[in-house]
Length: 495
Ligand code: HEC
Ligand code: HEC
Image: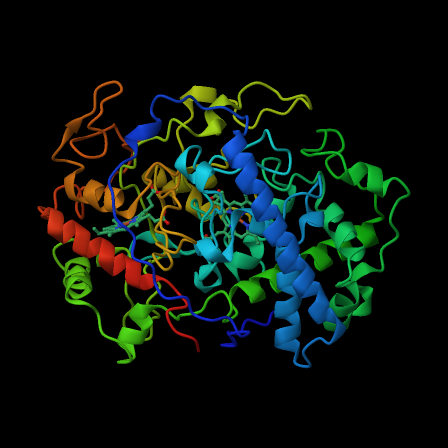
């Protein structure tokens, strides 16, 4: 059973008026720093605040269990939310999914200092950072199941920057995605997916879970050492890949329950509380608001001269405006030298090295999934028929939605953009599309980086030259595009 419905409940959240952001170019400020897996005091302070906010949201959510909604769809959404904010599902009981996906940032990374510097986030084991910037989990369940589209001659759909959560098994990419982080060594870090099921069985939402999914969900004979085994970070030893020792029957049951946990989370992600369609853009499309003249100019450029709409599609007949066409491209994003991942070559105290290639690492994108190259989590299988497409997909990442791309809690909050978090402002992204192939290459420690020069792309494999690089936009036109992007922030109005 997979219930995929979109409820438009708003849970009484009030739309915050859109905050205008002073758009500034600038990603050069950090070039002097080196990648490090140590968290700075500034980052630690913000992390403590984020953790407190997660605890608060989780407590509120668990309180609702006392009088759960009487319809099953809303029950599943409540379960999904309780799990998305549950830090107990990580090895050190310190990292919920939401740690990297908070509402006030449009369900992406909530630590301004990390966005400004590393671009990526530490896992439950705090010295292990991921190789990529957190995507938004809003709108993600609306991605099609990954498939080859012969008309486009391309792979379409899936979740993750490299499409590796295909959705073919569970019928939804976001559900398969949710099975990645719990056992990803650089994220929630459990040694066995059964640990996530065990930890969930100890939580106050267990009764609701059994009510929705059936009493057998947690009817599993746990070994006496389960607590111990589940407090050891993964990955598991090669000779004991499933260290929670269960009977075959119980392992099958745990797998089914893990699927139901993931489906619950995906159902919460697609609920009206997350996938809201309440931006100014939506209001304008419904004739309930008007663009400012500058936003209007920006929208026309987006669809015209600036060519954005070729990939970040604003809808079409029978198609929601999700601002992605779910294909993958290489736009030539420069490497982000601040990714701590580059420094994760040395085995840590548990003997784990996330990045065997060290400073040589180049993100292979979708091609890396198709060749199954050092995937940090691998929730879905590769279809053998896709393997021949690996070469033409090297360096390409899935086109992200632009919804909530400017959503931030206060104007000076820094967001990172691109798969590696290289870009630090929307103005900078737009300037890049406009001038990638016009400006010169930056020299070492070039102060013009991001304004008068660009560094080399992280990868030139399959780089798109057709729709970008030399757009001929004026500074005013760049700014108009930014102000259009700022109309995509949800909670402009309330449903
Ligand atoms: C340590 C930070 C971190 C944690 C914890 C985390 N994520 Fe993510 N999330 C990321 C990153 C980074 C990506 C992109 C990873 C990639 O492409 O390889 C991502 C991608 C996603 C996506 C894909 C969106 C899309 O458009 O394809 C979804 C959905 C998502 N996360 C939901 C979750 C859920 C659910 C959990 C908990 C089970 C979770 N995340 C835990 C960092 C995190
Ligand atoms: C050929 C397809 C394509 C076109 C055309 C295109 N984009 Fe993108 N866009 C992408 C891809 C792919 C990424 C992710 C790039 C990466 O991670 O390196 C991206 C990333 C972005 C991001 C960062 C989003 C985030 O969450 O990190 C923004 C903002 C953006 N694009 C806006 C635009 C605008 C504005 C235009 C028009 C000027 C445009 N794009 C044109 C494919 C495209």
